[in-house]
Image (tube, rainbow, N blue to C red; front, side):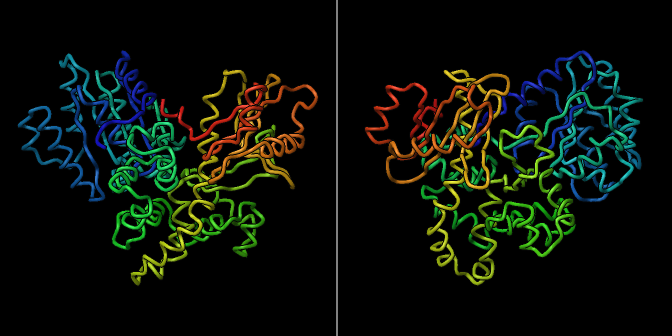
Length: 468
């Protein structure tokens, strides 16, 4: 579980920045446990690097710790023995080292937001240090942070003193499902999907779930046990980012219960729709929620058909199966809660995540007999289609159905999909239709024979090709 998985694009970005002629100023941010520090460690493995992890201590403690790190890395006894009340002398030593060093120096300020929290003027201090001491040196400065709101305010926003200094930035996302088997190659696709439905693509969560063979045992040990690592994780994540945790919890609980329309959310909470806007926007910015519209909508931002879904698999799971039973779990009734969970875990959670996995996998079909530039869900008042993929500048359109159930799927599923496709008006009468059906349990002989004759029909069972 300690091996480095994926992040090819992110590593390539860092390598490109390292190889450029000018000084590099890179910002890497994203939610906790997502693998930012691991990515940077992998990148710095064969490089001269000073990596400093800021803490929530005061500015003086952080400055002294950074001074010690730099002094040890550069073998600077004078700096080590100095008593400093400013940051500039430390960076003076770094700048002097870079003047004569043949190899580029990488300096990492991890959990950068704590430096700005300890001293709100620190971004301004670093701006001056960069402009006056570092920007012309053979250096690569990496600012890394896990509190998205604070990193945006302190580093990325137009109002930040550091705005315009960065040469690259990357918001780290969760690992895609198609790389999940690299963590647990011994598991079947079905077992991987069940785990992914809880852990999502968060490496730390995946590592925890790797230790148990049974998904329910893993859930009980790592989530339902009130002393476990993940028992209070959503509360911890939100408390670090927002001040009104209770309001955000109420919204997430309401959406997890099946209220996706803004009107339904506001009615359930007895709050005006306008009063929800800032909360929903913040949750989307934190990658916890996402607003979706039918994929064929030409102006998504203006669409009145938007629905809100919990984007993060673990948070969706937690609000569906943990939060409503906190009182029982606090009194040690894990077994009872686990039994309740087992009754609907597959039908009400895993099957939903399976749809997301299938939409992700559809992108790998692009160019294989069908061309498309957009993939998503589609719905109207009466009809819902799991997957619609189309070429906005062409004529190809793909309709898909995802079935995570025990029985093989037959010709009636294809007939139903074709019927629902008639409701989609996009390029009607001048389009080339294709159909894909995903089924965990395979297909009937009749449907297999139909697909063999009709190349517009694609059947995918067990997602085995994802492993290739």
